[in-house]
Every structure is written in C-alpha cells, then in structure tokens.
Image (cartoon, rainbow, N blue to C red; front, side, top):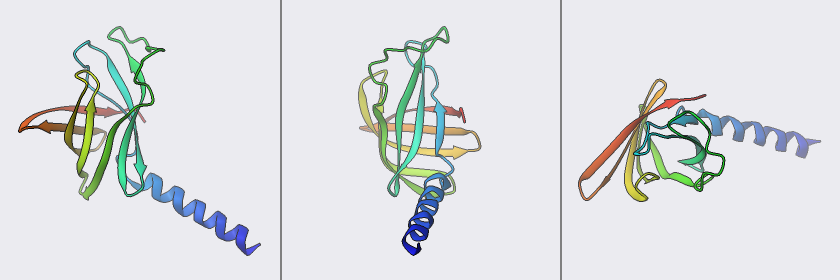
Length: 130
C-alpha cells in the first residue's frame, strides 16, 4: 500500500510540475509567408521547454490534414529565466526551413518568439489557443 501511495504522490507531483510553467499550452503562430498559421503545443521537456507542431491551418481557415511537419519539434532547449523570459533555445521556422537561436517572452496570452542567425533576427507574437 505504501508503494502505491508513493507512486500516486510522485505522479501528482510530476503532473503539477509539468503544468506549472506559464508558457505551457497551445499557441497559434502569426501567418507565415503563405498566409497560413500553425498551432504549436508548448510542453515541458525535463527542465526545458519544447514546442511541437500540432496543426496547420491555411489562409482560408481550413485545417491542412496532410501537413508534412505535423508532430515535428519546432522549439527545443528553451530554458525559463524567470519573469516570463526564456532563452538558450532553438527554433525551426517552417516557412523558411531554417533553424535559429531563439528566445521567448510571455506576457499574458501572448508569447513573443524571436530567432536570430548571424545577428539577423525575426520574430512573431503568438496567441494562446488554450
């Protein structure tokens, strides 16, 4: 019985830690070069934050059922720095097929995501879906 109780307690503590980060959730990107958006699930990856593409929506608002990058990790290695700031990670830009050094800043239901390579930066403000 003690083992079952200990396992249940560990699961509850683990689940609480997993949802404790305020950036965790589903986010909608700004429209890319084609006018479509992505829904990215931001989740804990150990002590870091990762983001996985869950869905693509075309410029007319229709879900792209056969989107080739669905399930692909788009953000990885992001470390929480406090006060809604994250850094030290990487982001893959689907519209350009490029990987950038990245940082994020959370403010309420908006997540500013920026990526830089060789001093050239670009960014988007993502909106929380849930």
